Amino acid sequence: MNIAEQVKTANKAVYDNAEGVTLLCQDISITHPAEQQRIRRVIASISPGGGEKKFLDLGTGYGNVLRIAKGYFEYSLGCDLNFYPLAALKKEHPSLPLVCCEAEKLAFKDGAFDCICIFSVLHHIADYGKVLGEAARVTKRGGYLYIDHENNYYFSRYARGFLRFLMSFSARDREIMLANFHAFMGKGMNPELIRQELAGLGFSEIKLEYRFTSRSYAFVVFLLKLISKIYPFKSCYTHFSIVAKK
Image 1 (cartoon, helix red, strand yellow):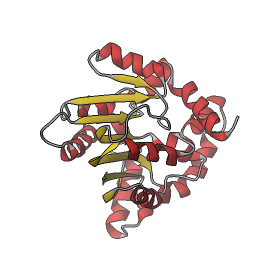
Image 2 (image 1 turned 180 degrees about the vertical axis):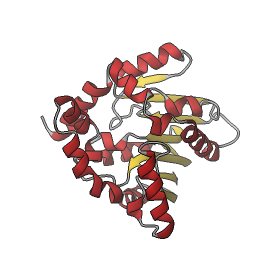
Image 3 (image 1 turned 120 degrees about the vertical axis):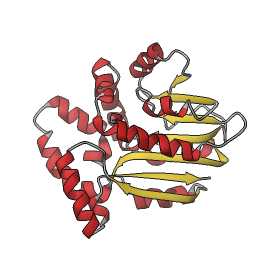
């Protein structure tokens, strides 16, 4: 089994079950009200007016962003590799259209969507370049790609060796590390390289923002924010987001 299949298998083992849904729902760095408001502001800023505008939440999980987007787009669709969280989401929100599929092989026509969201997904995929290529293909000319909550390579290159050590003592934690491949084990999520790749895929007006998580490890984030005000290095920021127009 190659590394891409190993990572995919680990993701299904970690997230395609009730425990995985609990993990998705309890990540306070995503679910905290301040973070939800930030996501809402981004979605509102890229939602076009008029017409039947379509939104795709790629790797929707338990529908965090999808549930926000449905208030701004006439048609909002969520897709994910894992069936269990989709089934749980469908039970709670029967009207939401959901599809179980791989992000590297989207069964949609070219230019099918006005906006594609990839929220906290790319680091779960060994070859995320394929996902970016598919996202570019199904984004309509003039549409937007929104990438968010990805681990900043410039920060994680210093932190992930220590994190790997902390999570190396149990089989479950090692599986979680493999599922979150680029956060712990792969080449990492280099935002500058991703920006270059998006430009090569036909995106322009690429806005890259380095940021902090809202509530995880609050004291550490407080210190990083303090340092960043004095020395605004890329390495001070835990995460990044990108909004790009095609």
